[in-house]
Length: 332
Ligand code: ATP
Image 1: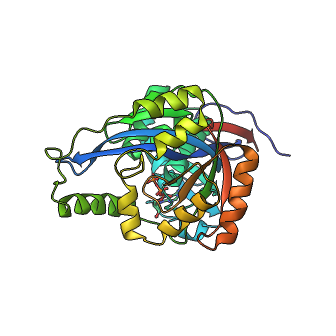
Image 2: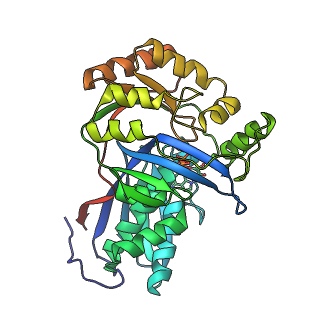
């Protein structure tokens, strides 16, 4: 195979390609505060990286500019223009260093698109790390995280992985300890849900119920103590209890809004619960649903039951926590 030394500086033809693997996420808790004047919501967001991955490859290009190709089952739903988050990441990194971007990006997409699992954010974080490595720009971690936050609220977490508490709109991260492996099943739905639309529906439901939707009406979001303790202890039954506690029976404040926009998700949640899931919830803004299992075997059985339930497109097993964006390959 053709290889070339990874010389620093702008990529020249024949320079290596760099592949980065990036995980999806599930929100173990998503506490949503009131609507802020800037249109965002304050969050207490307990992120868990899960072992479903996109791979982003950055390859040296002869011509200046950024091109992108996407492969995978949902590839047709991903934009290939300047709105692709991986392209925006490469642009921002080049601008940060005052260099001309010159790269071919290839995304091997396995994370459901618009599924509430931060697939676009994963690609942004992956492209950032892949281009930084390809271009030899050696961006300090703090600067990479700042560029991530500019790209989107969930992008910093895609870079760091593991488990973290996100405050602000989710971008201010504190790493969390996780004392064991958790077994999950994820059931992607047909078609995505727009995250902004789900937040708007959350505000609408709050207003309609007479509680109001602004920061003045809604209490500040706080992480759940029992949930953080369950993660730290690696205690699956305790995590299941924390995922389904609270007045609405879920740790996800966007769940009611996702169900309101996509009522059929209630059947998927019920099918998972009937098949023995220890907890069933909507992943982030949905429509992917997430189910906690007691073991790897339990997760396989649950996935099989969900697949044959006819209430979801498919069902995938994955464990958490998973490592953040990492270079897995470099070569010509
Ligand atoms: P989150 O959980 O962070 O709210 P999500 O998983 O619900 O995000 P994404 O898969 O990130 O949603 O995609 C949201 C939208 O972003 C898509 O509908 C798509 O149009 C756009 N998008 C831009 N770049 C990408 C990308 N590289 N991969 C997937 N979607 C992208």
